[in-house]
Length: 218
Image 1 (cartoon, rainbow, N blue to C red):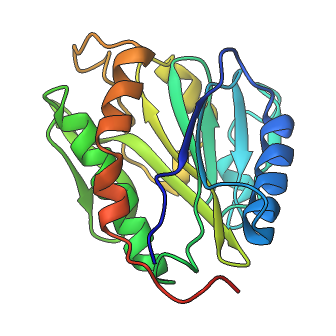
Image 2 (cartoon, rainbow, N blue to C red):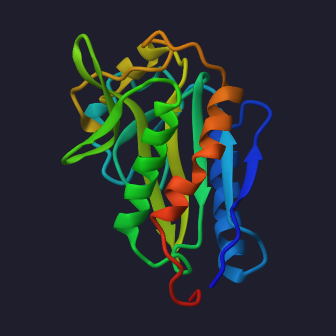
């Protein structure tokens, strides 16, 4: 089976989180129905916190700071806001091998390859979700991963901290982890969304190469 490269879409302005959830769900259903192509959707949100299916209310440290939304994805609390590039990845995993571990590994490898283009040596840490890099204070998380599959179509995705206000993360325990978060800007890397988006697009084959054509969609 020959699979097409997913459609690449960049949202031009801040996107309300409920609108993103509704659009992702509709697109995932359309992909399963065969009426829409797979898609990578690049967005930026206003400041907000999201709660994954494993979120612990005790880890929402400042409940009234920003709006809090149930995300429906795996994981715990995370932050989205200006200066953070979020990529919603809607792929037909049934047609790409039905290997969820390979999909997550592909997302990690994609982020690591993208960050390498900016001179950032990023890596994974066993037992922890996301992508990390070394700082003078020790390892810090620079990119997050949170996915959901419905009828073997993925949605949600990844987030790279380009130049967000890192103090905004202090209202939660990000992903339930004690380690700090960092960003390209905090590492002294000057990069705008256009440059990051271009690197993500060029490195997309790193993700797709982790997946293989599999059985016909269910």
